[in-house]
Length: 116
Image (cartoon, rainbow, N blue to C red):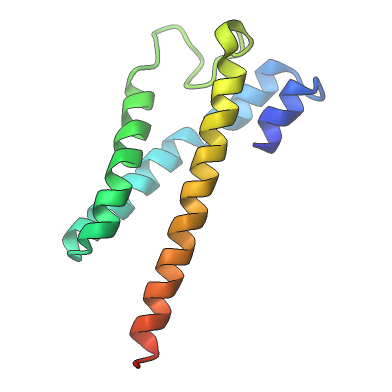
């Protein structure tokens, strides 16, 4: 979010912004896929079903990168067609999702460790 807002305010150029963001795309896809599979294996159905759409979206977004682009974030296209705003909106939604998951995991951990 900070990197995208820096680009929006012209504090950094598009190429450096996109290279910073693209180096985190693959770890994000792998990490989210691993967490989703672990929730399936451990039979936490609600959390698995909550994570599945986000993991699917991340994989879809990574697979559908047009050939010739630098990655999911491309410096030549980030200012075209309002992609910067959509990337900002997606980052805010992911931040909210990860905050929700953090508190759900924390609650689950505390409820397992400290019995009632």
